[in-house]
Amino acid sequence: MSSNPTPPTSATDTWPAAAASLPAAPPPLPPAEPVPSFLATGGKAIRELPRLAKAAILVFLLLVSVVSYVWAGRVSTDDAQVDAHITAVASQVSGYVVVLPIDDNMNVKEGDVLVQIDRREYQAEVDQAKATLQLAEAEAKSAELQIGLTRATTTHSTGGAAAQSESDAADYTMSEAQLERTATANLLQAQAEVAAKRATNERAQADLARYKPLLQTGDVSKFQFDAVDAAARVAQNELAAAEQQLAAAQQNVEIARATVNSSKARLARSQSLFQETKAREQQVPITAATYKSALASVEHAKAVLEQAELNLGYTTIKAPIAGQVTQKTVNLGQYVLPGNLLCTLVPLEQVYITANFKETQMAHVRVGQHAKIHVDTYDRDVDGTVESIAGAAGSRQALLPPQNATGNFIKVVQRIPVKILVQHSGDPHQVLRPGMNVEATIYTR
Image (cartoon, rainbow, N blue to C red; front, side):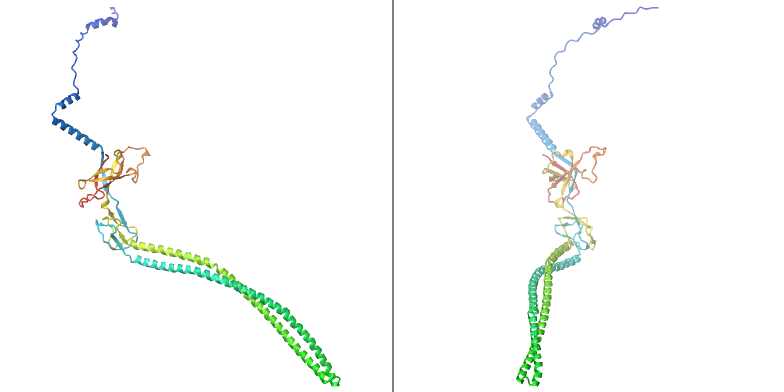
């Protein structure tokens, strides 16, 4: 069985039939009335309100604006606490506590005695240091006087020794001249005189020997013989005298030679004394050095005395500031060592607030801005003033600051410490104590 295929029809062939089968278009709508806007409706409603209602709405809007302005001009945080510069009191010397006038939580004023350590040992050290200083000052004074005495003595001794040496040199020269004169002139003259007298005596004795036999034979008279005999005795005596003069001249030579030797010895001794006095002049710088050493000893003794007085003063421990005694760890009769913590002083009149604000809150915070501090303990507010802002975030000042370069960084909002000074109310029943929690609000406008 066969069938005839239907020929395909195109879209252009079927469009008139499809168009004929569509429904007819609806008639056009009339133009719509305009819808009133919200502002127009609100404005019309406000205009239709009574005058009193309009005034109330205006006041409400003003209040909302003021509150929005105020809230937008302040930053707050509850991460804040009361803080203070707490002073730790420690001992500087060792000893037994003999007086303890303080007790726990006791208020003290600046300069009050906190602890008294036994001071007898340190007083003895002060007395010993004073005695040592007096001895050193006396030695220094003696050394100072010794400088002038040594200088004057050595100068005078040197001048005297020089004069004595010159005098001895002159005596030595004179004694040498005397020896020369005695040995040459007097001795030679005496020797010549002895020779002459000996020759005269020999001739006179020869004449006497010739006249003796002639006298016996009568060839010469007695008168002639007596004259020859007298001449012989005179010649003999003159020879003896000349010999005595020669012996005296020789003795004078020996005396002159001894005088020369003595003068020479005196000259050598005076020269040696002169050299000794010149050498003693070197004692002047030695005594000056001794004086400087004595002055150094004086300064050392002064330093020792000052240290001893300081140690004596350290036995009385006084309050460096006014505050309240806390953490008292010392008891009466206890032996303390240098560096032992005795107590701490909390200056309750000088507390301040440390408020840790987020870094996103710090854009408009400035020094000098007004602040409100809400104290949780008393549920009341106190006024304050921003005194300073920390130079780094709290995490950066921690013992182990974070290392953001380790690869596991997570961005965390940091907090910046702000120091706020508190205006004290003066109420003794509402004391701010370090460590109290507070809420801080800073008005940035």
